[in-house]
Image 1 (tube, helix red, strand yellow):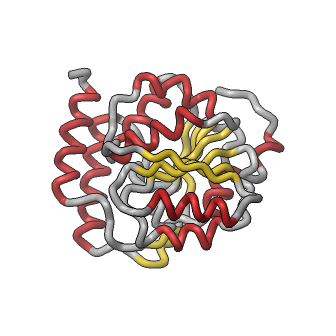
Image 2 (cartoon, rainbow, N blue to C red):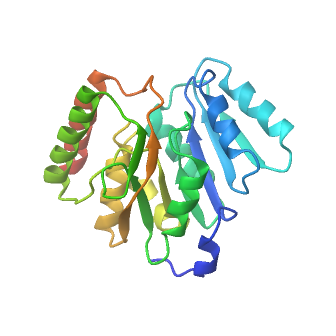
Amino acid sequence: MSKLDDNTLKGLADCTLVVPAYNEQDRIRTLFSDIRGSDAHFLFICDGTDDTARKVRDFGENNPEMDIRCLKFHQRLGKGGAIKAGMRESKTPFTGYMDADGSTSIKEMKVLCGQLAGADGVLGSRYLEGSRITTPQGFLRRLESRVFNLLIRVLFGISFHDTQCGAKVFRTESLNSVLPKIRSDGFELDVELVWRLEKEGYTVREYPITWNNMGDSRVRGQDAGSMLANLIKIRFGW
């Protein structure tokens, strides 16, 4: 595990937050309002066909005191591919990622970063005691999530209650040691990432989070089957 001064964990000045932003032009204003004035380093990965990248660049120009970068790709990377592209660009001691719709606030990301003392990764969890969901998902989506989590726990032997929450922070040194091994380009990246970190002996923990369902989820019903199939291939090295 990395040995860094815990004083660096009190804020976000040493953290790069990757924001995968696929066709988010209609929802990203919520995130902009929330992060304005933050001292974190923001890296937006825009791989869609709408006006998201221009909106990000405009926001950066209107807030020159902030560190806002935007990488524009003309091909679809997938959520996992976008997160990996951002992680490779991180030069700060800590790296995290958060959703572009603002479902997790910058305040919560700061709280997660503060929990990195003694750990290599912290996962925001919607299902631990102490978590708070201000606007819940529908019943079927919650049911799908819990069934998927149960399958993942059995398949990978991991104990996490919520691998799919889009709020996570890590020590960059630990991330870089497993990033070349990550095969996932889709939503299943969350599972593979924490599994590989634990396999390498790194310490990963969960922490309860305040989360708000913003609707219009990018995860569709057919994605769950694809995620599971890809994870089975990864788990058994196929």
